[in-house]
Length: 63
Image 1: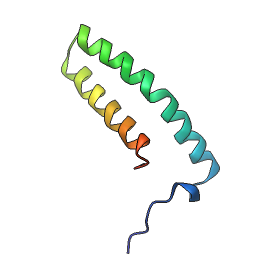
Image 2: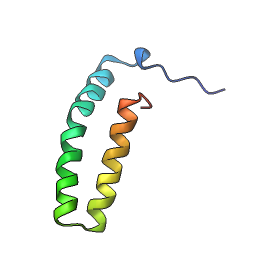
Image 3: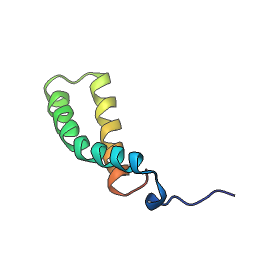
């Protein structure tokens, strides 16, 4: 049986890492969005998609 995800039971180092990631993901998304608009390559679009999905997952406490 799968246990439910509870962010309060995470170890302290993982909570710190998660909060640092959630602080830096929005500036990375903005920078990558500007870069994708100026020089659109396949890698840039994929990286922007990954960053946006990661930002949404951190915002909605999925990970």
